[in-house]
Length: 439
Figure (cartoon, helix red, strand yellow):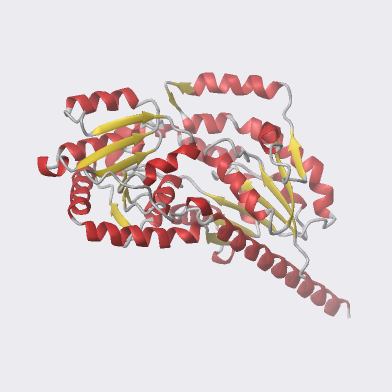
């Protein structure tokens, strides 16, 4: 039996009870730990949630100092003003991450230098903003980074939304690259970088001069096996059920979806119902928009729904409408596809790569007016063509199987094995070259 690789897995955000990046980090850990001899290093804030699973062993928790919670409250008070200023928040949170980063280095640099691990893999933070200091100890141990994702710009025709989302603070990314110690070196020295979208991959290659053989496309999001469609719930045959799932913030485009529905012929409107699952700063303006467009009989808002309960909304729906104009990962699209829902999305970021011509429609973000018009057109096509809906539904389920977490972990293990072999070959060639010189 082949010996399991010994892996140091660094996932600062790793929590099964949270959403977004912490949940993604946890899903990677859960599946990877079943395939390798894994030591997980994570932040102390995740300890309570992870300890509820006795099967999770060999976890090292890095606890923050007494000043960090105070500093985080200060950052939150500055950046959470009705709507979150994420570019500023991420920049100001660097000292909190750096405390974790330094402690990981202090605790593990000796063992990594000695070769106690076959590979070191850092998964979070997923945004390409911060360094990973332990790479300094990876002299003979392969270092894998990612998948990292982010940096996707707002489309030129959506500058009003960009301002609402504080895009004018994005200059802080370049400031960080110039000022944060070890940031550039992390990307330039990593044995392999995994990127979560084609845009980010090309940006990383150009920004850090990473050669093709050291960077690969690897979508960061996945789907649970039990989520993948086996049997849909009985549908309401009186209507075609449209679904939107996401935070109700400007760039997610729920307002464009409502406007698109208002432009549909009455005959089509009579055939559809829309459910909007989620909460956020735009909920009240969206509810007001529904009233102004006289769509009260067609649209229902659920508010925030627990992640484990959302699946029922997918299974009760027929079409997924998600005109987000700037999406890095877009896990909700994978969830919808897993439940057999043809998807209507905007082609900017990761979601435009999940959806193919066989599984839905990708709309170019030329302008707000164009997106609204195209969303209305694609809804009409799918409402009128049940055969097309059924064909796309089947293809969605087939497509999403490649994103199942277990399969993704298997691919990660294959990357581990390749990196270990490459490092061993490189070391052997160096030793042979040295012996020739000495001879």
